[in-house]
Image 1 (cartoon, helix red, strand yellow):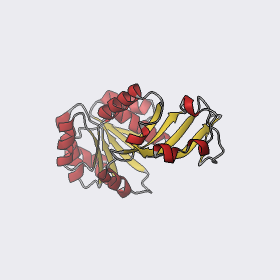
Image 2 (cartoon, rainbow, N blue to C red; image 1 turned 90 degrees about the vertical axis):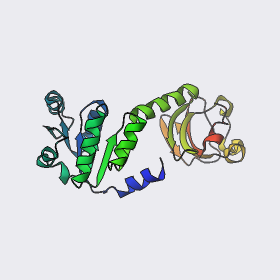
Image 3 (cartoon, rainbow, N blue to C red; image 1 turned 45 degrees about the horizontal axis):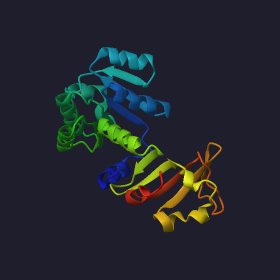
Image 4 (spheres, rainbow, N blue to C red; image 1 turned 180 degrees about the vertical axis):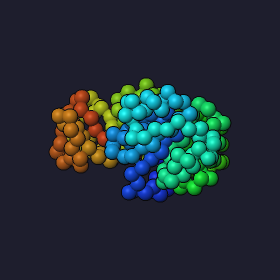
Amino acid sequence: MNLSSLNFFRSLRKDNQQFAVIGLGRFGRSVCSTLHKFGYQVLATDVDEKRVSEALTEEIAGHALQIDSTDPAALKEAGIFEFDTVIVAIGNYVQESIITTLNVKEGGVPHVIAKASSEVHCKLLKRVGADHVVFPEYEAGSALARTLTKPAILERFDLDPDNSIVELIVPDEFHGRTIAELQLRNRYGLNLIAVSKNGKFIINPEPDKQFEKGSAMVVIGSNRDINRLPI
């Protein structure tokens, strides 16, 4: 996550309970469904009547409307401009995505998140005012490549291009040894955040805690040092 992304997420209202999602493809449906499950009020829209009907039938959003988001009047009538945060989830139709993002920003929406399908698309979305752009296909591909090359790493959160927090399978070499014995900071330059036991994580474990084969551990540090682990 870069600093501009950090600043964007810090600017979001913590008390915001309403979101609008434009575009009900796989990405848009996933955003709607998750927000709805978390108890937020979600307005879902799409130009395709069938997708709107499915969103209502499957109850992935509290409200769903069929609108042409390239028409500013339609967006205004639907109340989109009244939302604090709008997600433009139109990824495969570049022209519609860009026009919609421009319309929403010009309508006064303070926080607009848009999905990009390519690097050029990403740049254009930023040019027309998108506050934050996501590139799920790229991110998923990058994550898969990392998993294939480092299968012991279960989860990774990139703090910046050089540093990460990772959850990984405890290396066989660590089995039976205590945290104090391994001295992860001195040997690898890493700080241990948690270790798992019986399916639950122990945060800030005691130095005499032994590592167990097949369990997981969470560390923070530079990617260079993480890559030095025997995994």
